[in-house]
Image 1 (cartoon, rainbow, N blue to C red):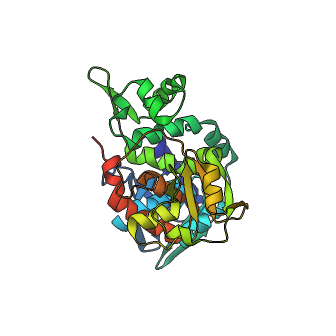
Image 2 (image 1 turned 180 degrees about the vertical axis):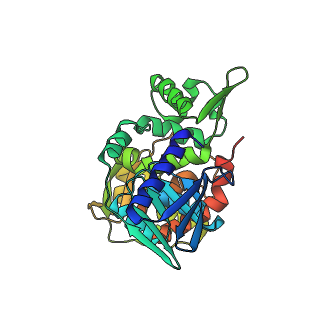
Image 3 (image 1 turned 90 degrees about the vertical axis):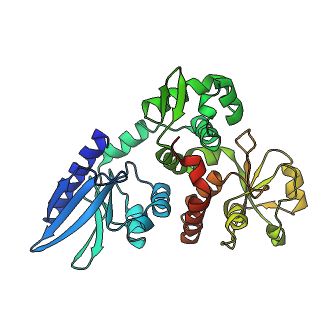
Length: 339
């Protein structure tokens, strides 16, 4: 556990005690590899025990990621983060995810113990989060290429740049930044190894809809005929399903309500073929493909499973989060396991 995570938990516990008047005892010796310690909350003669998981800079996307990957595997786990905005606090209550933050916000709902505090602020944390945000659009393209292609980190920077579709000169800075954050290590004779892949992917999923997706979004469209959604391919050369349709093809679980399509070229052909017209509220979303590599996929006309997952998480829709859980369980392990 990183020192800043320990300090964050201590501050959250202190603020929680100030806000509620309850006694809290924290043991920051991790009981498992995935948790950061244990806290016990006392109220009179009653006591409640939680395993603690630190999750710095929690966002809606990172929360959804945690729900799909962790919640079903745990007993009573409480998330501790730096700051939870009111809208996110409401979502955590809806999902019944206990949390504490360093501003005194909290949610716990157990027999004999109900606490919900939101809207406390620490503006300096918001400024720090923006200042130290590591992932910019170019870096997100490189990280995506690395995660989708195990072993790519050991190729030349020219190879990495080609796979990510970025300028060669941008790769060194991103790789240096990944090393500084503990996501990339050098072993032996300059051999590089990507590590903490789950955490790296969590950061990517959180940053993608905020920083990269707006850059590659071509537009939203409406159509009079939605029957072509049921086809296994968008029927235009190089176009690939993403989002809900890709998830439906991959899992046979979801009934799509929107269409997400990634294209390299032939945009006009796609628009004409399906009678698309620009509409900011349209159910068809078209984006420019931002990678430059091929990958094996059991559904040949869909984007990579990592991107399907990110598209679903970005919606915040509970049915899409349920589907993302299936993709996590069935598809993601081979890309995110530690070598």
